[in-house]
Amino acid sequence: MSLALGLALSHTVHAQSLVDLFGAAKQYDATYRGAQAQYEANKAKADQVISAIFPSIQLVTNATRTHANANSASSSFTFDRYYSTPNMVLSLNQPLYRPANLLQYEQSKLQLAQAVQTLVVAEQDLIVRVSQAYFDVLASQDSLTFVRAQKVAVAEQLASAKRNFEVGTATITDTREAQARYDLVIAQEIAADNDLRVKRLALDTIVGIKNAAPKTLNAGNALKPTLPQDVEEWVKQSETSHPTVLNAQLAMDIAQLEIERARAGHK
Image 1 (tube, one colour):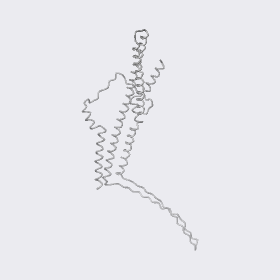
Image 2: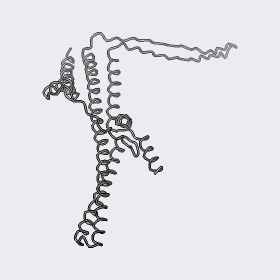
Image 3: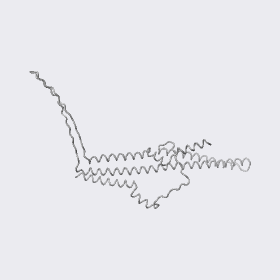
Image 4: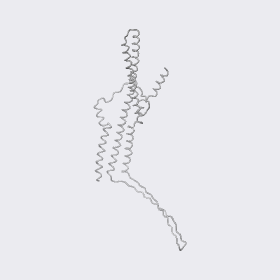
């Protein structure tokens, strides 16, 4: 009894909350890490584009070494010297009027904002996937617990049917029906156990933790209602704040700047 209690306490101590598993998934999930890398790439690209607007400084240095040698056959005069000629050029270039570069810089800022929205979409998608896998495991655990409780009850019914058959108060048909119900529950237990294994493997694949153990929900906790409760209000909010909508708007602005860049080539 004490061993079973110790194992239960150990399982509770090492159980992870939904927030813990989501944090682990952010460090492991390939889709989300790819969105992060894309954001960093767009950020670096924006820094490169701005260099076409700022002044550029170039420093070029070189040195020439000359060996002069002269000998006279009619006298003892000899000339042998080395000359070094250093050269340094410092140039500063500041564009005064390059509208195409300025428009490209504006594009890079919009592309960076677009990468931010893409990262938000990836994060929301990861939240959904982790939450789905998390609650799938809890639901499978509950199903397995329910089937095992059923097995105990059906096993008692089978034992009772066998005893009644032995004393002559039940027929062999009653015993066989009880045995069939027990065999069915055994099959359901195997199926529920396999389903739980599959759900746990799916969660491990997302969060990158072997044998992740989600914490069970506290009984009696009531979920707070979502505000506002009017669906139309949520639709209106999504039109102005949903990252996918904002991404589409940014894409349209980037395309408009591309048209202006093409026109600026004539200036």
